[in-house]
Length: 400
Image 1: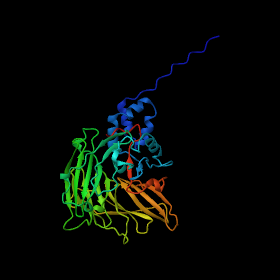
Image 2 (image 1 turned 45 degrees about the vertical axis):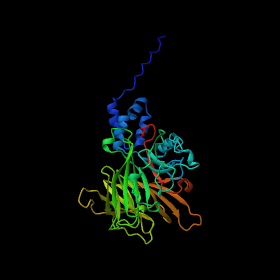
Image 3 (image 1 turned 30 degrees about the horizontal axis):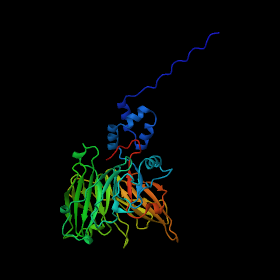
Image 4 (image 1 turned 120 degrees about the vertical axis):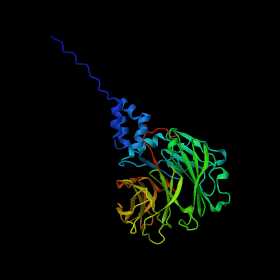
């Protein structure tokens, strides 16, 4: 009896050149798609996790917002749960990173004080144990919670801070900024900016991780016109590489371009706000190269979006265009808790109930996509929350 023919040897799966893989991966729309592709096989993973490729991918696709860090609640990344589209990546980040910041050493004289999140940008977090702004923050730390690295920032030199101040009349506003273009050759470089704000003036100081020094950068005075009544009441927003400040009582916003380190005032659109309105206008990326100003609508069931293209003209801007964004739940009181780039963090309180029910949403202004955050009010705490944007592991490179 003839024996059965031997099976043909299995053919090895064809391997695509790395250049072609990278060209395919670069065309993916989101980091989550790249993360799923990297899990297919070892060759895909090597191509997707290559440092040079990830830098190029990041320049085309900014990292997604994966959660929110509360000012006074370290140890927790408040992230979306399923069916939120970013839930898998956010869960992977929350499990891999240390948001309790246990790897950052504590000075023995700080007792039971905890780290507070003052800012977050590009995968880095700015920490201080100080709760208030009316004293110079001498314990600033910049850290990378995913790779558990940190850099201690030296105190601001006394000669750079205005000497004719009293502590009741000035506050300190530290925040993170990207490195200058000429510093980008140092792959892990970053900057910390600190605004020293009095009742009539802002003085801006800059720390560079490349030089490891503070320097005076720029300043602006609001006398005699008083276009900004009280600079200490300004609230900061970061949009497309620039910083903006607004408050409820002025018709101008303050703009800082961190590349040129120049402070300028830009006129806001005319916004009809109810008297004693405490809901500040916020600045967002409205998409299509447009800058947006968002407020809660007069009847509290819409958001008013004013947007325009930024031009290199004498007046700096074209006319504002007004759009109305309907809110998904009627009969609720809406508040804007925070904003960064094209994202808004919205707090919703049910009106007329003895025990107010509060829920949180993230709105992406570009796509008008509402996603509910399943977090408690106690988790969110007090103080300004900070969006944390990052590629999910293993696609996230060290930032320090």
